[in-house]
Every structure is written in structure tokens, then in C-alpha cells.
Amino acid sequence: MAKASDVAKLMIEIANSNPNEDLMTNLRLNKLLYFAQVGSLKRLGYLLIEDEFEAWKFGPVVKQIYDSYKMHGRNGIPTAPCNRESLTREEQLYIIDVVRTFSPKSTSTLVSDSHLLGGPWEKAYTSNETIISKDYIKDYDNKAIEIKPFKSKFKETDFIGYRNESNILVLPKELDYAE
Image 1 (tube, rainbow, N blue to C red):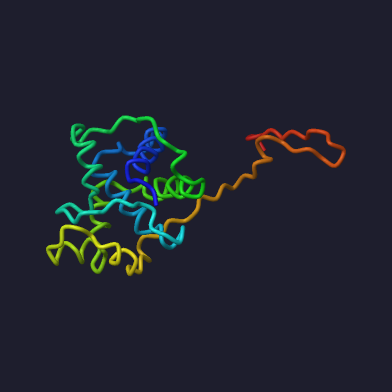
Image 2: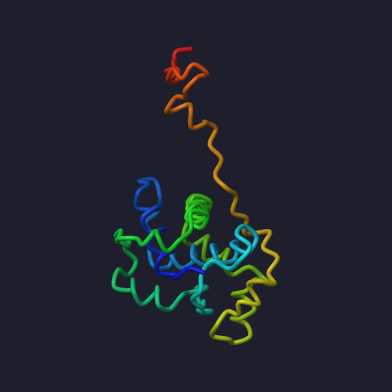
């Protein structure tokens, strides 16, 4: 399992590299961490984040992450160095897919989505439990939170070429938009 801080830094880096992405605020970041945790069992076969999630009024929060970024208020969080070595390649690709999956949604929609009836946050919050049990997350049938792997319509060889059977480099055909 990964540290929430490493996952958070990678999410911030991904979001900040896309000019069309909403600002990565503390609220948005905590919701994305939650969705990454909820979807990870199905995709990775284990819970991604080792830290505990707490059931706060506006949804699930990793307190250490909230405390680390609260000085930014409602503003975007700047990119910080990310320790990618602490995450497997599969985890990194999964985190990219989480950010891509939820980037079209507004932060307020993410808050609503984290409050789904019968979800881990809702179970903990309505029971006045501070910590969202990992068992709640494991038991949750998360059909509403589906994180699909990114599929490109291009192959790698469309960009870099390939070597044919005579070992000659065949470069990709240039796109002709006039066709």
C-alpha cells in the first residue's frame, strides 16, 4: 500500500500538467484520493492507500493530507516533487486513470458522488464514526465508481515508427488533415 502523500503529489502533478483540468484544491484532492481507494480493490486487487480516511461533513478526508494543504484554502495546490519510486508502475497508471476519469466532473459533483447512499463515507458518517473502516471500503460494491484504463486510439508505432523485417526504420505517415 502507498502513502496518501505520494499518491496526492502525483495527482497534483497530473492535474497541474493539464491546463483544462480544474484547480486541484484540498477538497478536490481528498475526493480523488477517496475514489482511488474505493476503486483500487477492483482494479489493483488491494487497497491503494495505507492511510485512514475520516468521515467529515463534506466527505471523506485523509487528515494528514488536509493538514498539509490547508494553507492553500480554496486555491489550487502547486506541484511539489513526487516520489514516484514509492509507487509501482501499475499504481502510477491507475492514479493517472483516476485523475482522467474524474477530471470532467466539478468539485461539487465529486463531493456529491462521495456521499452515495450505502457508500463507505455514508455508512461511517451516519453512524457517527470518525474513521471510514477499510472493511466498509472492501465491502462496497462500487459500480458507481468505475475507473477504466485509458485506451489510446493510437499505437506507439504511430508516433515513433518501427523496424521492418530488414531492420529499416519505417517512420509514421504524416497526418493529412485535408483528406
